[in-house]
Amino acid sequence: MTPAPPVPPGTSEAPLAPDAAGRPATPEAASPVTPAAPPPPSATSSPPVAGPDFRHLERLSDDTGLFEHARNAVVRRQHGYCTDDVARGLVVTSRERAPSPGVHRLAECYLAFLTHAQDDTGAFRNRLSHDRRWSDEPGLGDWWGRALWGLGTAAARNPAAWIRDEALITFTLGASRRSSHPRAMVFAGLGAAEVLRVRPGDGPATALLADAALAVGLPPEDPGASGTPGTPGDPAWPWPQPELTYANAALAEVLVSAGHLLGDGRTLAAGLRMLAWLGETQTTAGRFSVVPVTGWRRHGPRDRYDQQPIELAALADAFATAGDVTGDPAWRAGVWRAVAWFRGANDRGAVMWDPATGGGYDGLTPYGPNLNQGAESTIALISTMQHAERLREAGHSPGTEHPPEADRPPEAGFPRQGGRPRRGEPAPGPEDPGRPGRPGRAARTGLAGLAGEPPPGRAGAS
Image 1 (cartoon, helix red, strand yellow):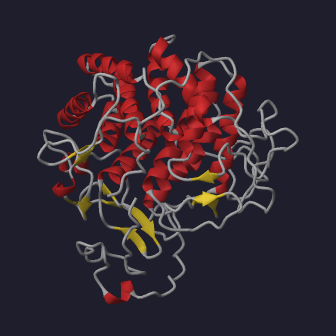
Image 2 (spheres, helix red, strand yellow):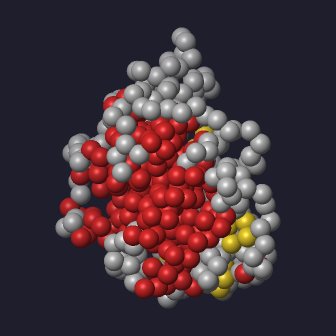
């Protein structure tokens, strides 16, 4: 994702828009000064978010699909559409139990786009220009995985039977393929989990979810994992990869889902432990401070900005899934913390959405929010607020959630899953994460068809 343009520090009203090159509107904002300390974050200082707001998503969409980019709230048609974002749009529109006519039309449009993007082998094209010409060949990058996530969600949750039926057909064809890219497999696995929750025993979905868990692997410190002989796992880094990059919580979520739906307790426990650690290591003074777009490598320095809304949406999804699977109400604290990030409980004390448009801001910079309101960030906002609405409907609120252990510090609040999760930066040590473990009892199909696809897409820029 392109780094977000800076915004003048200490600005209470929305500043002037960045120019076409993404430069700040004022010379002061462009000066290489050290940002002022953030004001105390408050989740109650922003306008209330009553529930998911689809106004800006409708603004970004036409009868073909969903435009990827915006400058401020104005769509940038010259950048066209992408399967990545259309699939995300299908996820959130299909989650609505009683969609408005406008939201229902969006789901129809996004489903039609994905069926058009798919070829007869199950792969997907990703980029369509405004003149409706594809600029790439079908592949199995992140967009393939997200397409299956959107289709699986539509097949399981959309209230329209004909959408569910068509989505399942398109999902099943795509589920016959496998990607060599772990995150593409993770996103596809989330779609497979959606299908299995309503169609237990579905063969293609079962095989895909098992292979998605296999692509993630188990953290090397897991007692049953097959780490490098003689090299114990590092309890300060209970993660199966040496780096956190983007949508990190989705990796833990797919293990939680696979362990639960495929009857594999070891994989379930590993996913929960990874998620607890991820929540704590990205929490500062009771608020989320997520790994930024530059990522964070084990034993390496960790930048603070630019933080991306996709990270909060992935955390909210994963915490909600963990709560559903375990029945432990402590996981709800993570959902509310993600909601609070958008409302101002973040490292800049900045509200991360525009109440005038319903759009989500594209990133949190040292100077405040990047005011562009693209598709990825707006969908991240909608997705997170859907979880908040679901909790409120069940009678829950942020003030009713409590950490499971009274003696834990403010940055805690997540259930402990086998060993004390580490907080803060990892201590120096041998950089050898070990080989990921294999998931236990689950159906597998072999990781076929891995060669020849283009590299995975990074989280979409806006």
